[in-house]
Image 1 (cartoon, rainbow over the protein chains, first blue to last red):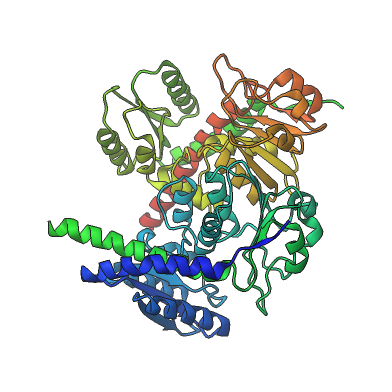
Image 2: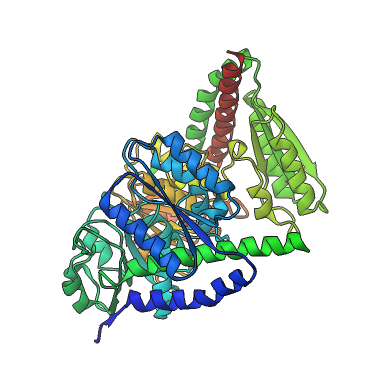
Length: 286
Length: 286
């Protein structure tokens, strides 16, 4: 069997290419899509992530409104900042970079993001809508996983997907996206007993654990599809790539897999939100 | 092995008993818990269900505000009715009896129920909060399943729960409740391939399919726990009870299993909502 590498860079480029014309069309209507990013404190990797996202916006003609709050920001101050952005008609999307300093109630802050600007898909309200099949921006990493699946025409319906990890921004939403596409989904996590036995049954493995090289080669069923959403220090995925490569029919590398597509999804959601703004303004003008 | 019958009537009584004192305490504070039920049209079994719920309220001293709208009610009119109840400070909970006549957009109506009055747990917003582990009224049938599990001290953590069915008011929320209690959860449905093979691995089987006697005895692993949320015509569950009884360590009968506990959960959520109202009014008075 020849294993196919699921190249996230190619998928990311395809998505970004598809957005160029849409951004141009918006600009012709005097609307510049705008993503506001909020960085709190001075965590170096968070700074890098936010910068990458901002740069990716600008490269595509999306305005990047970068807000950098000091380490000592309180939950209340952060929420006030989010509310200001919620009310700013020029802002189409709001991204609060995770993690914030530990004295802040991050979840309370996430929940304050207006649903129509939640392009990063972090609110519980957005998760609920997504789970029930309403139109909604899914979390960007789960959306990236689905975009890779679609780009490479990987069959989902009737397949057994095993999701390892149950975070609100990864494991839970990707489980719901796969379920709504008619996969049978098993949600595994740190309390799962005999995890390898579950993974061994998977047609599709989603690794979203946050532990480097956690998923072993001998856990993988011959011919399984592996999507590695891990991004551990040193750019190492959650999957032991070399060992899993042999067994799988297709696999995402790290780096160059899910990561770059995640940023593209953020851009795509921001453009979609700007298109909603454009449609609304057309309605008002008429 | 002696199979234990999980007696829903006993669980329901225990829950209702625990509410008597709480209702009395509210009344001492001049607050009468109130559940508004909305019935649209003349479906006889819906009429029966609504009547049962209303009577159960009154038996416990909870006010039952029964609204019966005609068959030809529009979505807009139904939503206007819900909004009026949302704004009525005397109403603690709103239950819209499912199903409504087919010309009405039932989901749109459900979504309009104010989150703090969604004691039946039908909104996507409530589902999102529940999934993320926030305090929230879960859907009553999933809540009933968890109440039975707790009453009979059934271990959930690390167990493999297989949920058959993925409806927004049953399969999806019960999956999330079990996941948040550290079960490994497999979500199965009509597109699942080789369903018996999944069920055969389950320590806990949740049947939420809506097809009479669907789950067969030879699908059940020796010693599994079976919770049957089915309520098909003629009071027949989703599980072939006699065949599954032999294999399981414990099982809910139909009738007398999940059903009666569901109504108790509705009462419990209504009382909780009234307690929130009481706490708010105390805060205002001080």
